[in-house]
Length: 253
Image (cartoon, rainbow, N blue to C red):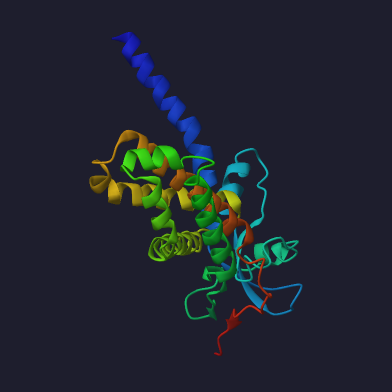
């Protein structure tokens, strides 16, 4: 009984020790999580920025919080800016609904990276199913003869369907990435893998009848293509475009 009481006392003490820094981290996160309006040092126009409150809260546990931006209405086109507006963002109070109008530039889909990613996925598919890699195993599993495969290659409809599927997937990845705060290849790959997993789950009932070898060939191809699409979309979104001025403006009072 005494041992149990001591253990409970230890748990209460540990909880109190952890509670104080947790409350401090929560206070930091609450103070800096809302978006703020600042004047961009490059354009001298009003833009909307968001401070990385999670990073500030985590580093604040060590005594001194570190601050940097996690989002801006000029991103991803200017995601590598110097963040010289950070001191002003720390001084300014968060804006409330109706005070400012934030444009949708940070949720824009850039079409050229999507087209490049879709072409790369389609081209990898052509190589994947060529005689250099898995065509022989693919033909055997489907029960096709070389003559039938040549006829299939000469048709336009299979190529158009595969191109359409690659385009649809690439646009899906680009759309998913617009909802994230950070942009980059790893974020694009993460969105791509999430979408790939959703597609696999949705098509699982119709693929159970396929042979294990064919499932391995097609599953590995789609996964490799998904990673390539995510890397291209994540890396190039906002870079293969002409930067435009932000549409973040102050509303008239």
